[in-house]
Length: 560
Image (tube, rainbow, N blue to C red; front, side):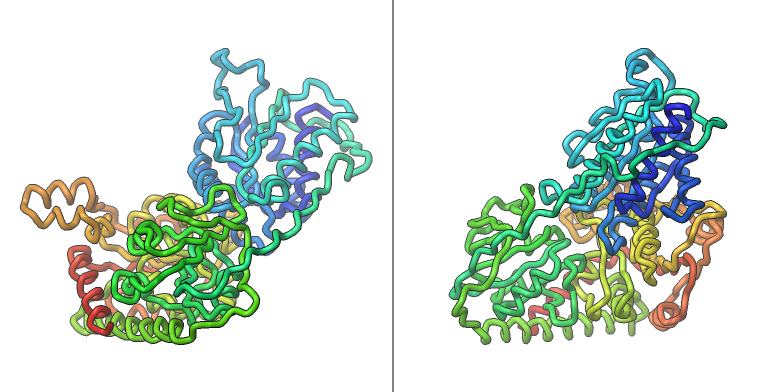
């Protein structure tokens, strides 16, 4: 067997043995040996192969496949050499900051061609810098020798273990750069004799859980659950009887949490907080950032990662795990105060949104509320960055067993549709995606699926405010009110209204499209069954974002 075919065959076999179930392949010449081996493995049912023509989309698809995998196995993305590898960088960065396992297999020219001007040849070694948890390289073999096989398997085993977080307790992206020399197509030699199929596949045990640090009673405490916080946050809040303030993608955004907490933090109740126990990465709102930065409340960060969350640099203690100290005495009045305030704030928010609807105005928070209301146990709700995730943060109440996912590692708008498709495919869950129009347009190419590719049951809800609506609620929107010149500048560099006809674009990809014109139509469309990929297009008025935000704040303050 020619050496490139041998290398690719061994690596794909090892991928399957190491538990990797999903591989995303982008077409290319230098990666052809891997493509042939993956196609054979997919035919044999050993892995599921997904083919995409755009590397950026492919990488976010792999990210979503990893997020949706119930075994937390890394999905792999395979590219050819050159700029193809560089296009993976946004998803690699997101995986790094959100702690999602991701395996990059970058095909490369033989190392001796670097620096010679050879076509599609650049320095791919550690191209992602410090974003990857581990980097490895397999030079292009010039001859096949059976003794190489265990070594090839061992390098891949190290890569998969590093991606899983079995080494260093930090799941995330890894890169294995693999050289291939010609010929790049299989020959007519007999099948590869691999000897012991487990030779070189080092088994790495997961490190034991750290001993928790005990937290004493006393200060008025809240548990703040950011992105990826997990069940530990809810368990601590329940056992200690402390209020739980949970972002949508925390994993614990259930009906018992204080939904509009960010509108309460700036008031009298927020000023009473004396201690905050932080799980995950809270990144959504300025009131939370101010709480963690002002220094009047003690901050305890719970994180096993070296890049723990402490943007305000006020953390008094950083620990891998916590527990309530023996003899803890719950302050039920403190918890009741938050629960009561949360219910009143929720009623105030609902009242404003319903009033807007009676006056003929569908709003972003209304769409988020109705979307979360139809989410059922076992379903998946994926949310894009910018206003949609903040709208969910304000109103979302989902049942136990449902899950909200979002790319909050770097909170970018890129790759969101691809991530949702990947999560839906890997989890086999009925999935909805909530995005703004710019986020949708940024990744509309993800709707381009080949004829043989599996399609998930995914309903994409596009809240279309014709541009960058989030800037209206920030200081940029306030400045735009100062005069005609400021408004003109705002519209050009922040508003960025687009002229894409969404229906034409969506139907060009062969995807079902529905335009929603009011609250009743939205409820009906969300309640209707769906299969395959479909788009609900909900236009709203961007010019009223600042006014709506002010009305919500005033309504909640009036209830306090």
